[in-house]
Image (cartoon, rainbow, N blue to C red):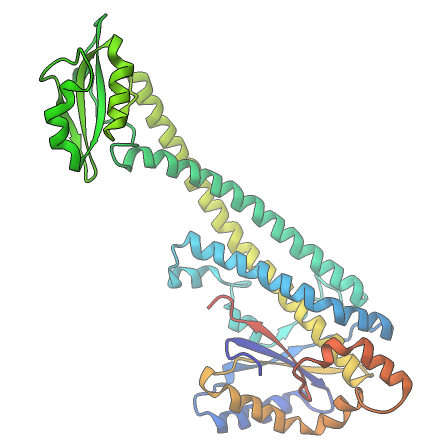
Length: 392
């Protein structure tokens, strides 16, 4: 059964007035659901393509589902990129999920037309498919490159911010330690900075003087504290530095390697500012590109769906290749009833659609064998493909 989380694209042979068909369907669908509105039903204007040979149509019918799945994934990735850039804010996302200033529903349900200027219908179906695949591949490659560039910039910024916002065991000390906190210009002694876990502070205070020989008594000073660590400075003789740091490691104290430098402080500030600016610029560029490429990719995606509808319609109903296209957005609560209305309305197509796959002729049996993968799918008297609500 078709999903209730997708818009259904349907084709049937054009046997009469297409506008009358829409009105008739609207009347029946409205009767089975009082909440079904005219905006949930629209016409797809299917052009008359160059049909080609039966062999070429069968080959395309086997190939198109693979492209369909690939296109669906690419459009979904663009939407996911937008969603991540906008912090999963539905209202903001809806502002960027547009196609030529139209919502997705308006694009599909308000008299959809083939883009003749861009994809002239006089092309052969094979050439048409190749053009669509080439365009979608180009969109995907551009998005991958831009997204990778943004992720690298964001990663660099996060790493620098982590130095500013992490706990005292990892964060930069440049904006915490002042020059006066450290012993300066001593040939024999030096200040050492030690991050002590909060639960070991009491032990540290009573034992740090005995961690190594030549630790200056009562020299430990608490300089900063957070939820996890307290940062101490302690004065030792330079020649016991290695022994002191080894004992600190054994006792789960973390010695921070830090040399006060005003130049280093300025450098870190500049690096953070540069990384922040680069991330913001690439975020803006990726957001703009994603919005543009969603519009482009979704249009390519729907055009491929229409090619699938056309190919299947020719294989099922034969020539002349004149078909009426219909787009329906079903209501989740009445999906089964909507499908039932369609099945009953198009029952008259049963002989034409099933006749293509029945009979005892050897040639027809060969055809069924080649086309078995499609015949194994759920079968209706009308041709139906779905556009999933990947932006919901």
